[in-house]
Length: 187
Image 1 (cartoon, rainbow, N blue to C red):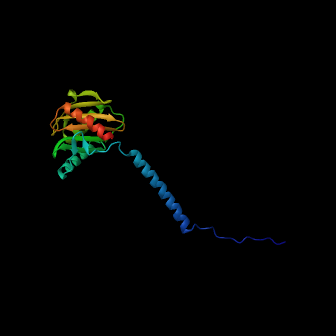
Image 2: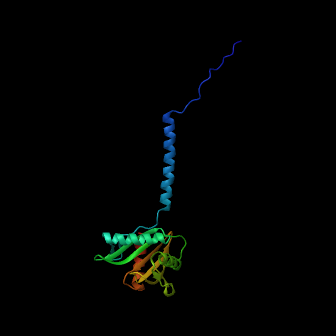
Image 3: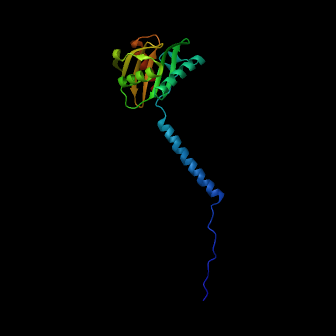
C-alpha cells in the first residue's frame, strides 16, 4: 500500500497588490475618522461679512488688529475668531466668537474679563455689569477699559460664546450690536 505524501509547499505570500489594497483601506478609514472628527469639532460660528450696517474691515492694518486679538484669545485659553467691523473704513467694534460649553452670559463675561485681563491688561467692569434678555438670548454688558474699547456685551449660545466690544459707544449701542452680531453669526 502506498500512501500519497503531500509535497510541502511554501506558505502563500501576500502579493504586492493585496498588501497595497489593505494599506489603502486602512488609510481611507483613518481619513474618514479624521474628517468626521474635524467636522464634529468645527466651530458653530463663522465671522460674517457684515453686522447690522457695518462691514468687516479687511485692510492689512485691520487684519493685524484681528490677528492681535485672536492671539489674545489664544493666550487667554480660548479658541476662536475675531472680526473688526466699521463704516467708511473706520473701526467701530470687534466681534469675538470662541468655543465654550455651558457658560451663561455673565459667566462668559467673567471668563472674558479674566482671560483678556491676563493677556492684554484690559479691564471689564464686572461690578457695573448688567444682564438683559433680547430676542430670546441673555446678554451681559459692562464697561471695558484699559485699551481702546468703551463697552462689551457677551452672550452664550450652544457650543460658543460671542462678544462685541465697542470702541466709542456705550452699553446700549454695544448691546444692539451684540444682538445683530449673534443673528449674523447664526446665519
